[in-house]
Image (cartoon, rainbow, N blue to C red):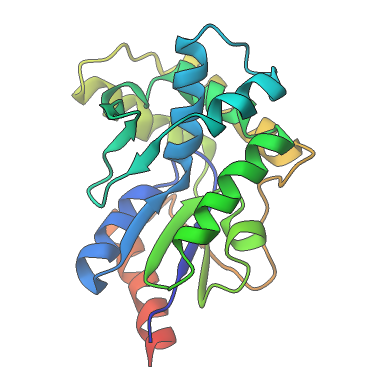
Length: 219
């Protein structure tokens, strides 16, 4: 039996890292739904759209050939835009467009259709509550804002990007507020999701904890 795994949580909690490792261990396909919103934000900004122009962004999505490959590569109309999706500007843009109801509906429909046959791991903000409410494994992965800012700071340094810890922390807190207070599908822990606080855990410990949940659900 192919099961689906849903992982929700705030920005920088390690959702994508955990999902990718689980794919290696169990043979799942990872669909990073956050990358879909980032792709929409990147494409919209590139076209000069404002992130609150809901109708124009929805129209843009209808004309986008958006694909996420099994290795995480994001293609829009055949162009690999993956290297441009992790900047702070795109992170905030993704948070902004994710508040738009028409945008969410369009992308959720894509995500649900992809996962119909099972065998997927999806991570995002509303996977447990909206996208995959019937997923066999549901996880809410979180960490303190300070720990997540430190992780993002070190990641930026390793990539040779501009890195200022106070600014990163402020951006993370701002995005947390936006994600949890938006009217459409806010970030929340569902009652049936297992919460894992990774603040004082290694990534290997987090991956092992989620792996145990997947193993039990697969029996």
